[in-house]
Length: 429
Image (cartoon, rainbow, N blue to C red):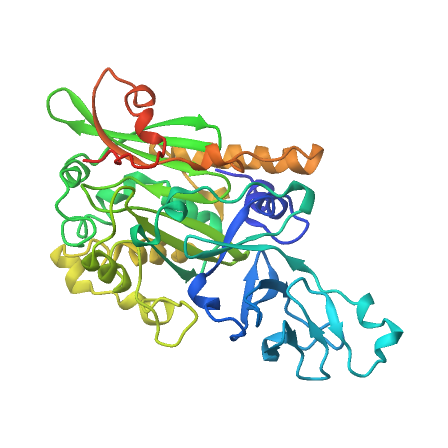
């Protein structure tokens, strides 16, 4: 378990907090490209790491992320007009460009230079792989551009979605690196969901309910190996990479696409759950893409007209079906792998009280993740040491599902399979 001060450290990500400063040293997914698809289109409110901002694509197609509020009287610029290379506040006409620089104050003479003294906070954006990424840290510590494999393959090979999750980022992430719950919570979905079914690995998940965890430090985070018994003196290994601060990948099943997540704090009580699917060596099929849009696999259906709010949510008890639970169709009565996870993670409350936990061997990945990220946050706060996982090499990782002889450590038997390389098939069972 964690002490209260440790739990506060890992869950608080606002400006000036140690964990918030750590997050601000990475490129983070901020928006889907579809949200700012049109030059001169509608602006979008965005809250990340407890900061309220406004994103827009100006009339020239340039991306901007600036403070949401006008420097004059604090009006939300979401009401503003996107016009002629900037966003204009509708209250008194003050205008800002994509860098937050004030370009016009109509009530003041241009020659006075008043507008030139006004600038809103702004952050750089880059667009890659259908995602608009943001860097919110010091300019002189900006890392290389994201190198995640899903964001660098052709767009025909990848799919990305996001959803609001009503809990702290950490309890969502911890579910992403906990392979033991699959044998229970997701047992009804493994052979029914079109993006999971048919893989032989499903049999091992369902037949061995007491997996053994072996966790290794990796350059950017951890490699979390989970083994289950298999035939012919073998183990079935599922290896999940965690890369700081909030990237995880789910080990693949058969020739289905590989998938994973980012868990990005909105504030201390809510996060964005980003979910990607991609295949490293082929285009996604029309059927796979449609299944993802329909909320299958790790994706969800949305409340119509909402800002990526899941159709299944707290207000309707996640559309829980007790009859399906009794029948074993769904182990928890909640449909869909994503919301099976989210419903239980949200049930812990906005911020889980980790002082009350009773951890076991299958929590070793979570224990080591907490230790490593707290150590990195303290090192950054105390002596300015930049955290791991910012370099392209740390991000070129893959999750792995593999059968190995029992005497073979996964660190040896799956070493090459854990490295992403262009044109290389992923290792799966």
